[in-house]
Image (cartoon, rainbow, N blue to C red; front, side, top):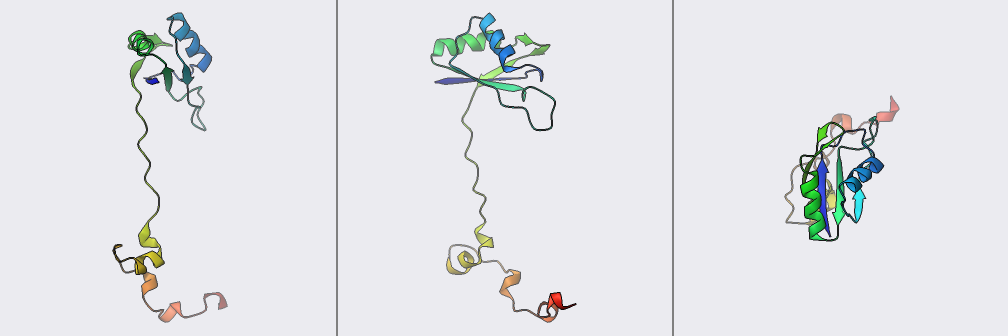
Length: 128
């Protein structure tokens, strides 16, 4: 299945308006995905839409029809949709004390927990 990315949509264009626009061009598509607007913004979309097609001919026809076409006063731009790159893992092995001290491949950097308590650290903080 091929997916077309269409951007530069006017913020007031709804999904039903865009579907009607595609039907006027005689385009056949399998699925239309318009992400919800960002929270706190007064709009109907985020300025882009993904359209999935089952055949290469439908994809090419849609790209020719939509590229540079005006909708609600803005010129549409199209490109092939790409898969999202994987997001990095939000885990820092340097913060895990057990991993830092037991795994020789993890570089050990000094940490405040590596030094013995002194002076104000030894007092009871809640006794004041």
